[in-house]
Length: 126
Image (tube, rainbow, N blue to C red; front, top):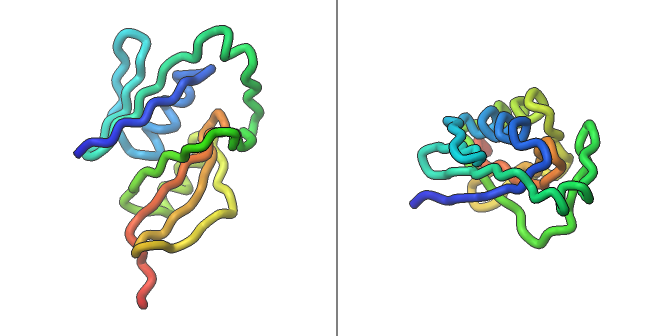
């Protein structure tokens, strides 16, 4: 079953590059929608409507935008490699990391400050 997540963006090209890099997905663009696809996910990047975009301030490095009640979680093959990709693609790795249900988790910020979580099978032994 494929999971789909959509993000509105003030800089869709930069955000699409971030998700393509971090999730190691395949990027395509059609009708002003960037789609990043993997085996079990797709991320849609849409340009934010002008009236909303003018109210969004994007800082560099990005600061967390936590005023939403949902957090997207993506499974990656290797968490440490994905965290390195976050930094290389312009995001931020937070200090929130934990192990739960045999997965290691880490919160990160994408290039626009959206807080997402990456997880991979835990290497820790019980």
